[in-house]
Length: 172
Image (cartoon, rainbow, N blue to C red):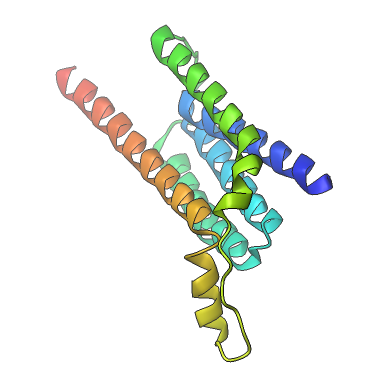
């Protein structure tokens, strides 16, 4: 019971932090919420009894975001007050619909989880690395790939935002 409550809490907080990352105009707020979202994804891995992947998630990805945070503090004016103006209402409605579909998927995921579980052959004869590889590419493959897709989308969004800013700088 507590694991289900923790899972739904971590899932909602993670999605909320990533939405803050997408919608915030302040670069430091975006990077802070991205780092928090990565920590909560690590917490989701801990709930799945994948401690190694959870620790790697927290150390590698959150550490990389903190390095990005340091560069952001050097390159952006952090004292300047930012006024957030919502101009793209269609994008907000689309993201709300996406969030609703995602929430329904999260709620329905435990119903389908029993059919997706694969028994990994872990025995005495396997080394620790071999057993970890079998588990990661059988039982936890969907979660691992979902994290990779989320990072790819975040990277593409960052490239698009930087290219728009560079294009706006060339026209002025």
